[in-house]
Length: 243
Image (cartoon, helix red, strand yellow):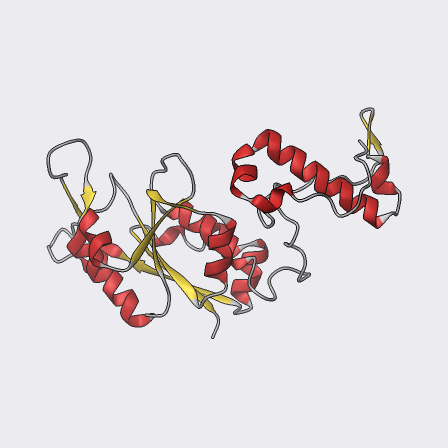
């Protein structure tokens, strides 16, 4: 059975969107993964198909109702009980590469996309739902966040990337940002490719890449260095860094 995604949303027309092109789109067409959308509004019971109401305690905006969302979630859980249910919300667990790998290794995911001021908290207490955030900022809804999460997962599925090792040295796979890349021409606007990359010495190149990844991570994302002890490991050889 292919890796499958169910997206619970008020805007199913947003899918597959970017997931229908490039690597994810080819994999979708080839059946490596599947995508289904669930219209949350179909689970409303009044004639207006209402999915939200005013916030308890007052305040601006509207809140998505727990009873309507629960009916949608229950249907997905009945259909794919083995797939974890995620809720895209800025109040959730930060999405990182470790979680992406965990989700990509499983049977698939069901993703609940929030809108308005968010979801009634009782839904998250009453159902097995993992709140997930893609960053410390606010979007108009969870759909864009769901697309980002799905893209990150799909590219790790077997057969999606051209080479099995394509993603092994990318940013965050080892707890470091990825080293910088260069290609032809050798000289561009007075800037040249580092000579070590043209040396053919694979040990020196590996050492240079590790040192650049570590240096860039320390300067741009020191939080990653603190979080990952492996980031402090010495380079694979004692070759000095060359710029």
